[in-house]
Every structure is written in structure tokens, then in C-alpha cells.
Image 1 (cartoon, one colour):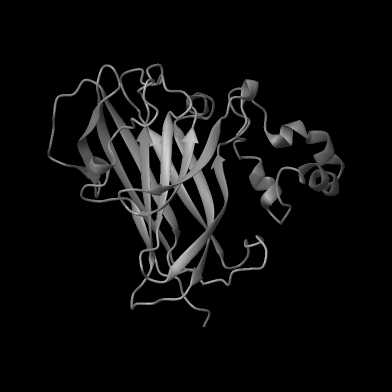
Image 2 (cartoon, helix red, strand yellow):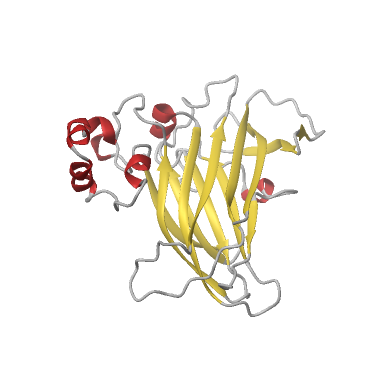
Length: 271
């Protein structure tokens, strides 16, 4: 296996009304760039992407049971802050306070993909809720079989999954308010598929401003040109503008200048 990791930190200037923002500094190779502007309301945004860059190709199965030895997990981390102003209280857009996009660009290389099992992870017990293990403590003490039966409606039972599920953040929050939800669309600027995590402000308050997410990808097809592959591009942006659901900071044009957070995946035939 060949795991690659890419990361970046930017400092964003946020306007007083939260409708405009621009990158004022970028951290590359451990040093901030020399552009230093006096901005009293700046907010660091940290984001990273990691995963297998030489995955094995898989045939398209007759059903949707694609997760197996030729399926691969890709992880992202997004951190907000710290800052010397109360940015959380000014995040008035609650439903899409943080937007994390993973763009999957197959290009013309001859490859395609299947996506499955997106998650948002957070250590539990959290500030307000108990963990899945807390809620089923009696059954856990009774037998592992009981745990498996209880978990069937929520997750597939495979070795290690039950323990890992203790740290998954459920999409449903209090009063049927979504903690987070997924959205797929076609990226107009990159002309490729995009997978989007939309995260409620309550998650930052309850679990902290360091977010972790994962998705499982399985790759299909064959190379039509030498060196063909798939590009995975991560976009992490913040929502302050309550009146505009698609006004995210910083703009993607600025976010990807110089050093976009991306992985180049080159699927391999089984040797």
C-alpha cells in the first residue's frame, strides 16, 4: 500500500457582516507566506486529505456490495481556529456552518469510481450526548452477540466496525435537526463529480472545531492513456452569511492558489 498525505493552513479575513472573506496568509512547508495584512478578524482554517494512491481496480459487482479488499478509505481533517474573537457566535448560518467537498476528477483516463460509507467522526461521549456504547452498556456486558443484534439497523457488523462506530457522529441531532448531511453534485469549474459534507454549527460546539470525515471509494475501468489516474481535490469552507446558503469563505479560487490539497490516485491492475 502507498498512502499519501497533503495538508494546508490558511488565515482568512472575515468581514464584520460575515458576507466577505479573503485569504491573507497561507502556511506552506511550515512557514507563513510574507504577505502580512492588518486584519483584526482573522480565522485559521486547517485541512488535510490522506489515502491510498495506488489502489487495485475492482470489477463492477452485480449488486451494491462493493466494500471489500479493493475498496479504500480516504480521510479528511478540517480544523477551525483558534482565534481571538468569538467566531462561533457569529456563525449565523447553522445548517451549513462548515462545508467540506471532495471532488473526484476522473478526466479522460478511462477510470471511474463507486463511493460509499461516508462518515463524520467525533470522540464520544460528547458535550451533550452519550455514545452508542453508553446507550447499550447492559447488552455489551451480556454478550457480543447481543451487541451485533442491536447494531444491525445502524451499521454492518464486520470485525472492528462495532468499536469504531462508537465514534461516529449520527446525522440526526436534537429535535430532528440534522447534525450533518451529504450532497452530491457536478462541479461546474472542475467538470467532475463532487461529494459534499454539510455540517451544522452544533457539531462544532458539541464535538469541537476539529472535524474528521471519511469515505470509501472503489475504482473501476482501465487506463486509456499512459499515466492515467484520478484526482481527489479537497475544499473546506466556512459559512457565516445567514442570508445566502452558497456564500462560503474563502472562495475556492483563493483556496486553491499555489498548493491545492489533493491526491493523485493511479489505480492498478491486479498483478
